[in-house]
Length: 193
Image (cartoon, rainbow, N blue to C red; front, top):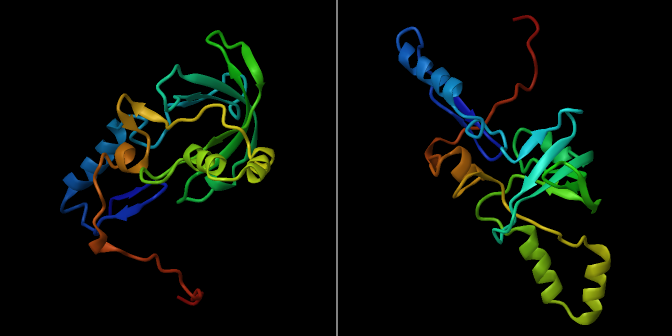
């Protein structure tokens, strides 16, 4: 019973007899064994630092195609959204921007990393609407209570391929909705069986 799981989908095939049809099982394991890291769900824009595996170098490719910016995390502020099997995997970090040589460049900032569906509005667009669509009194409120965006961008697996679920992991394929299933949880355990 091969399966696929990512932040937005869980897909399970019908059961099969791997003794009678070993090729399907071999193809499944071969696909996992020979897949590149991006195909397995690893984000190529995030790397562990050598000094501490819980600190990361995060590369942000700005939406305006300007030069990529790199940030070294100092600590994780929030990882609650990264714990569930499905969801946006939101993590919030306290990083500082770094230069090519690794030297620090600028003040400490807040960096939010999340998986986002390809058809969702980006926060930068929503923040711009908040700033632009309010009267002067409300603009003061927005400026006081919301963070100022320094840079923003989507993660790219490779040139021209955004690291979202549909294009990055599913390669543009869409799971068919005709085979929806629900995981069944037992209401009680029969300890006698």
